[in-house]
Length: 68
Image 1 (cartoon, rainbow, N blue to C red):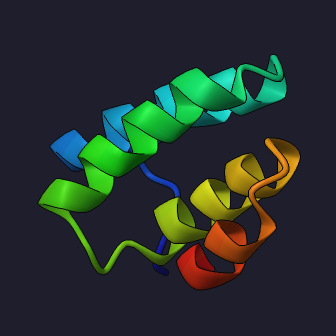
Image 2: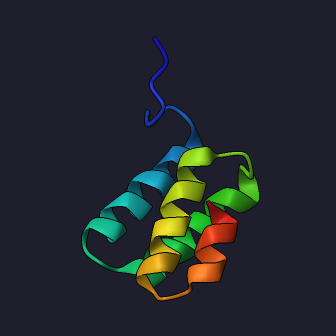
């Protein structure tokens, strides 16, 4: 069985931090974590989804749509 949100890869540490920041409504900080993660792993669909959420919460809707 595949676990999509596991912490088995180094980039997943960033994803965990970004998720925690989103839960605390710290969208700017989460965006920074997610952009670093995506620089290393540009195909990470979960990171793209979280980035889209952050950008939408920051009112940057066209960027959110592009990130999704």
